[in-house]
Image (cartoon, rainbow, N blue to C red; front, side, top):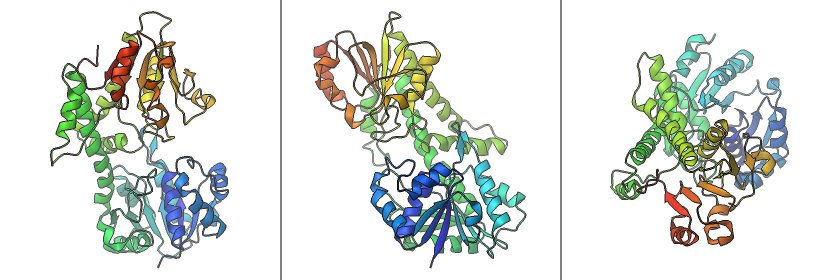
Length: 429
């Protein structure tokens, strides 16, 4: 039975895990070196809480009952025998393992417990644990227990959580795996555990994300190269095959997981002495798609007075996170090349949007002054905008990267607006 646990990192991964443990009666301490993060958690208003609002009541309850607390003082957590690492492993869109390594070394150096258990939940590049084993001053499996247990739950969806999804668990020894499974059983039923080795566990997470990324980027490449074909419809029909999952086209893959998966794998394969092709191509295709969208906007600017508008910088609908945002990347490229561009997103205030890049921030609706409008994210606030004729004028160009406005194509025609859905014939000039 797990009595207490320390979770290193108070972001999405750490906070959601902490609430799950605390709800099961486990004493949880979140360690985060950032005092603002700690203050936000202890006050019931954590960073990222605006889209983790479904956790708000549970968070406040476990804080009030003192099952969960946060601290920025490392010495407060060294007496706990179980530690979960949920720190960032990317920096500026690239793999970055320094924080994970520093966290593990700090625990080993300061722990006053006999054979502490360290569970790494952060996404890793294959080979990171080997670095730990080679450089730690203690022997894993003898002096401490170490396991890799990547997360599969989706933080913005309470139905996909630690209590109902299968969990890959890989320790450096069979006993480490067993110890990790025993600890995780506080929140994940034993029948959902999938024990394996640490090297398989750290590879599995990157591979899961990469498998999706490569498929999506193949579809994007076909849409770019065969832009006179109805790739969107072909993709929809292909997704009905029993071997395939439905995919959709977009301006690129956003988020902090899927597009990074191929980078984690590419790093591992490069360090192994190989020149990976498929994973590298997927990453390059993602960048090429965003560049193409920016070029498409530039092509439709006939005069210096022409204005463009990017609708949506959240990387998915109704989700306040701009991590690896395709919409933001397109706007950045336009701004860097001195093309007038504005951005809007209902989940950020205009002054917040202005901090992202040197572009104007506008209200959540389009405006007749904009000649080119790109729908990058299908936020709920955007879905019915085509129904308002006052927002449109003849001669405008709309590129829909989501399909959300397809049902209004007839209205755009009435307005004299040129509408294109990504992947349909002629969507690229």
